[in-house]
Every structure is written in C-alpha cells, then in structure tokens.
Amino acid sequence: MNKISQLQLFAVMLCGHAFSLMTFFPYTFDNPTEYMIGVLISTAIEVLLAVPAVIIYKRFSGLDPCSLAGESSKGLRTAAGIFYTLTFFYFAYRVTGNFVYFLDSVLSGYFPRALVVVSVCAAAVYLGLMKASVIGKTSGIMLALFALFTVLVIASSFSKTESDFLSFHLASENITHGISEAVRCELLRNLDMVFLLFFLPKLRGSPVRVSALYLGVKLVMVELSVGFVTVMLGDFAMTSKLPFSSMASYSTSSMIERFDAAFMAVWVILAIVRLGAVLHCSADCIKAVFPKADRTLSVIISAAIPAAAAVHKLTAYDWESTAYDMSGWLLTVTAMLFVPLVIAAFVLLRERREADVRGA
Image (tube, rainbow, N blue to C red; front, side, top):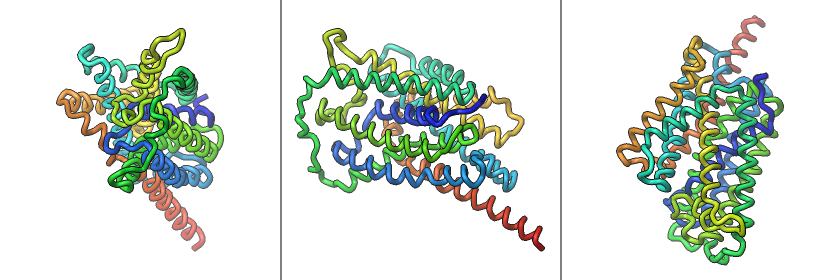
C-alpha cells in the first residue's frame, strides 16, 4: 500500500534537516548564541507555516496543493504544478550542489564532480521511484543511524571540551542582524516542510501530530547540536565548512581513533534520502502539469535538470555564493503558506458560487 505513517513522514522531514545541520553553519555571522536564538524564532514561524497543511487535511480531505487546485480549475492546477515543480527543482539543485561542494572540501582532487553528481542522483532516482512507505522506512533507518552517530561522537568527546562555554555570548556588532540571518537560514533549511503538503494524500494519520513532533524534535536537535559543537570547537564551529566532520575527527575512543568516516557514511546517505524524497514529490507536481507524463521519466527529469545546473555552477567554481545565500527562505514561506492559502481560497469561492447557483 502506498501509504506513509506519521512517524515515517516525521523521519523523512527530520532526515532532511539533519543533512543540512551536518553540512555547514552560515559564515554570514559568527555567534552561536545568535544562531540558537534565531532557531527559536524560526520555529515559532514554522508553526504558522504548518497551518495550511492542517486546513487542507481537515477541510479538503488531505489533497496535495496541486490536486486541490484542480478542484477549482485546470488552469489553477497547471499553475500550482509549475510553481511546485520549480520549487522542488530548486530544492534538488541546492541539495546536490551543497553535497558535492562540501564533499569536495574534504576529498579535494580525489574525484570528478560530475561522476559524484551522477552517482548520487542515480541512487536518489531509484529511491524516488519507490512507494512513499519505502521512502519513510528508509528515512527511519537513517534517522536511527544519525542518532547513533551523534550519541557516539558526544560520548567520545566529553573529555576533550575546551571552550568552557565561553563561546556563548552576545558580544556582537549587530545582534539584530545576526539573529535575523539565523532565522532566514533556518527557514531555508526547513524547506523539508513542503513534504508535509505533498505526502498528505498518502499519510496515515493527522499532519497536526507530524508537525508538532517534527518541530519539537527539530528544535531540540538543532539547539543541542549547535550547543555541543560550539562547546567542542569554540569559535571554530561557525567558520568550519563541515563542523560535524571536524568534531567527528576530534572525537576519539579506546576502540575508534576517529569518527569522521562514520560522519561521511551517514552524511552521504542522508543526502540521498533527502534528494529521493524531493524527486518523488517533484514527479507528482509534473503529473499535475502533464497528466499523461510517465512517472519514471518525471523522476529522472527532476534529477537531471537541477543536477546539470549544479554541475555548471560547480564547474565555474562559483557554488560558495549559492551555498551561503539565504534568500531562498522566501520560497519556504511562499510554498508552505501563501500558495496553499490562495489555492484554498479559490476552491472555497468556487464552492460558494456553485452553492449559490443551486440555491437560485
């Protein structure tokens, strides 16, 4: 059955955020305390972003935005399909590019970038063609591995902390700017919330519980992770390209000298899981624009176009400006809040007009 449970959808969304968290912290600010405050504020905003999904679930029987738009008109469905297809293309573009760019910083010169892109996208395409339940189960396994990795690294690092919490301060030239940058960063990273809208028709249970569980656990996970990485690495945490990798290299135990190999394994598979979920949803959006489109071809196209754009940018050695560009936060807000509410308003207006005609 092509259904996904509440816990599985929670795992899909949290795996995506875990990948972003393990990748980098924005260098546009260097104060971890500002970042942690920004995470609190962004989570409060994200609670509002979950409202349209709840409304659609309760009022419109859990249709995804494109299907709901089709209840109003074919034109609105096509427009919604185009918008969300481009949204998922951008999502895939960032995941692919960020993965290759930051992998290159660890294994520079050891691999051709195009080959890595093809390999990762091929694995993601395979996962994207699977049923929602398979994606959910895979995400659950990877979330468990991420949790195990994190616990092992933390347990192996207690004796090596050096900053003594001195890095937690608000001595900053512009606190407001730092916090606002952190809010924008977290909103962009939380583009995974769009999964909540597009897995709605396949969800067993309420999106209310999924949203509450995801936002609560995500908040705790990010705050604890940023806090511990800062305690371990001090000011270096905010300037390191791969802070989790640096922390894993720094952590040792009596049996394992370095944990960076474990970091790489978990990080790579989290990227594939996140990208696979993106391609799965993107194919649904393409179907809304081209109802007769072949699903396999749609998934392949959803991987190929963003990958080609990412490779072009990477080849020009211009990806860093994209990686640290946080302006995409507006896309998260638009895709989660504004567009679903506009679609719902159109459907309600059509229902009212039809009711008036029947009553005349």
